[in-house]
Amino acid sequence: MRIVFKTDYMQDIRPWKDRYQLSLYLILLAVVFAAPWVLDVFYLGELTNVLIWAIAGMGLMVLTGHTGQASLGHAAFLAFGCYSNVILLEAGVPFILAFPLAGVITGIIGALVAIPALRLHGIYLAIFTLAMSILVDDIIVLTEPWSGGVSGKYIAGIDLFGLTIDRWGTPMLFYWLVLAVTVIVTLGYINLLRSPLGRSFIAVRDSEVSAQAMGVDIARTKTISFGLSCMVTGWAGAFMGLFAGAFNNETFSVVISIELLMMIVIGGLGSIHGAFFGAIIIGFLPQFLSIAKEYVGAVFGGSTVAIPGLEFGIFGMILIAFILFEPMGIYGRWLKIRTFFELFPFYRKDMFKRQKSYLKTERLR
Amino acid sequence: MSLLEIENVTLKFGGLTAVDNLSFSVEEGEVFAIVGPNGAGKSTVFNLISRFYDPYAGSIRFDGHNLLEVKPSGVAAYGVARTFQNIELFEHATVLQNLLVGRHRHRRTNLFSEILFTPSARRQELENREKVEEVIDFLDLQAYRDKMIAGLPYGVRKVVEVARALATDPKLLLLDEPASGLSVEETTDMRWWIDDIRRQMGITVLMVEHDMGLVSGVSDRVLAMADGAKLALGTPAEVQSHPAVIEAYLGKAS
Image 1 (tube, rainbow over the protein chains, first blue to last red):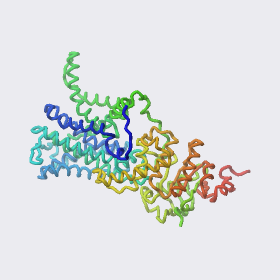
Image 2: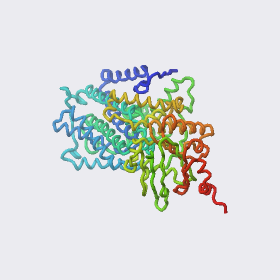
Image 3: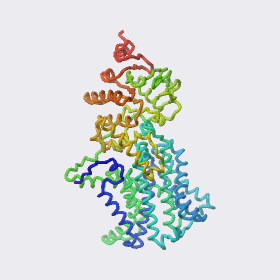
Image 4: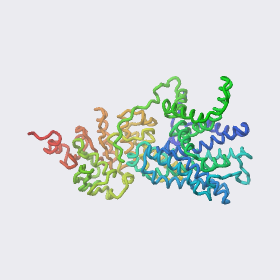
């Protein structure tokens, strides 16, 4: 049983609870930093993919997990980020500028989209953003002179500080680049959550009326949340483009949007950890399935032919299982396990049980 | 000049007149209660002051400012804080986070200094925390500081809502049925707190309440309403014995 004694307000303001927790995270960081020397090229690529999905997940988490605005259209912002990055690179803008700009452009587009979306709630907002995700396919085809339309675009390596970073040629450098951005985004996210803006996001999520009564401007807060979310998603999109090397109007389909939303739900809504846990599931599930299929095939003597839709079927089942049995996602389960050991032997089964909520004031909409 | 001046305010929902040509003013430093049967328009008056509704006619002035010119989120900036009849806390946040949201109107940092968590942002957080701790001490919420609202009992939630309103450092506190659903003991606590809020903190209190014991115990003046209109205004004793009030509550002897 570990008890943290609080003697200073800074202990609550600091992102870590105590030195023990800080050292755990530093060890984790050291391990992922050293990963390229241990893993082979294939698994390094997979790990890079997981980190890119984690960035995208954090982007959506700001909006859906913390501001409570469900978006089924984030693939559109992945596409905006990807295309603006590549188009800027092709225009001769160096990567060090093009990459941040790609995110900023996507963020501005996101904030503009937020203005009509502000009047929508819940399922209507989800449908609105879903429509956007479908629209972006056509936008890419229609803007063929810039976007390359159906034939798509290619991107080889990029130059950064005199180094050529290429997903295939120098996978280690690409991995570290993605890792650096992941760490920066995560730190920014942590800072956001411990400052007034992050708390106003949570306020808007849980009760718009009382957020307003506390002086939180709902429209402004939602717009900022959309902007930040889309900016981070845009960066993830830029990386996805670099990772894939080639992409066209069908790369960022609605399916990606749905996958992204499913990912953060499975990971655990409303926590940074959730974005990472979800990304690990979504990144390694295809590999896990193909390995599992070989074993199953060997045991039962079945064939190892690909079963169409298997991945999505399994993914859907995982999602249903989580919503039924662990609505807080993997992070919620992790919290329970951690609390069990921290409080051993005093953990009770109902510790995390929620009380039924009471009648809410009639929503003033 | 009074702190809050409501003049000839009328609000109609379609054919229903929810508030009918209502005028009253709240003086600085007093506890002012609004009573009346269900549907009298008491909470509607609160929602008008909070700017959730636009009045059909009339004016609402607070501390020399015309409240009708500001957005709903701008009311808090002038120093008006409120609680809700059916508890509107941020369920999936801790008590501490809820109270810190109350400090939002004192935010000086911007998006960039917060994402970088600059020393000024840290200083602001420390200041906010100190203010919030004062409120926690005042309302005896120490034991619940790091608890999620979703797991708290009703009585505590009620107190947390008052605490969140106090954390905004208001000039005027609007309490919408602070004692509804509370036990006798909790109601007594609430009574002393309202008294202390006025005496120690110097905050003017405007409350809607059904519990006449609480109303006559703490309030200086009482406004009785029925069907959106003013019935009587005066000291608790005056209002309780006013014939129109007795008629509204008990009906006319035939």
